[in-house]
Amino acid sequence: MTRPGPNVGVTMLVVDLARMLRRRFEAALAEVETGLTVGEARTLFYVWRLPGQRQAALADAMYVEPMTLVGYLDSLEKAGLINRCADPRDKRAKLVELTPLADPLLERIGNALTDVRSTALSGLDDQDKTTLEALLQTMKDSLLLDAAKWKQP
Image 1 (spheres, helix red, strand yellow):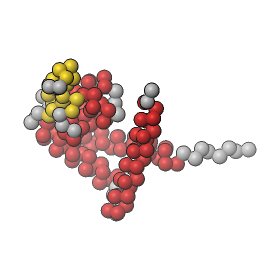
Image 2 (image 1 turned 180 degrees about the vertical axis):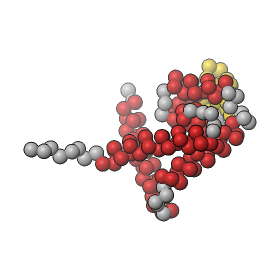
Image 3 (image 1 turned 45 degrees about the vertical axis):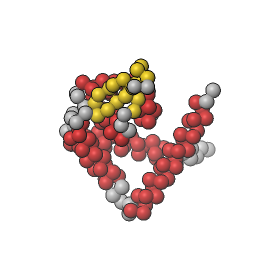
Image 4 (image 1 turned 120 degrees about the vertical axis):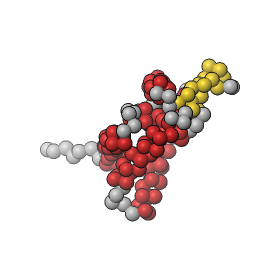
């Protein structure tokens, strides 16, 4: 007797899609010659998107471990793309800010993201794109709510 395969539908589709998007983003980054790894480019993007945040807040927003983020920030700081300064409210915490050297790289990263998005969504009309984004955001929100339940003591 043959056992039917598991019905994981959207779960595996999204997992596979995320990996494909990451590979395509890596290729697009190489094309625009940022000199950054995907992790570094993603970190730079989040620092731009969430300016003046503490390192811990950035790690949470990016869904990475704080020590992973520290490695990316070390590389970006060494390249002169970010500065870390003491938080005036807590001298132990560091705030992360962009330097002017980051501007041209952010433009290239934006171009890479636009290219990947354009390719991935090329078969959809504007309404479908809007619907897809809303549905994916709903999935993300549901997972965040679920994760919050598991973090509580």
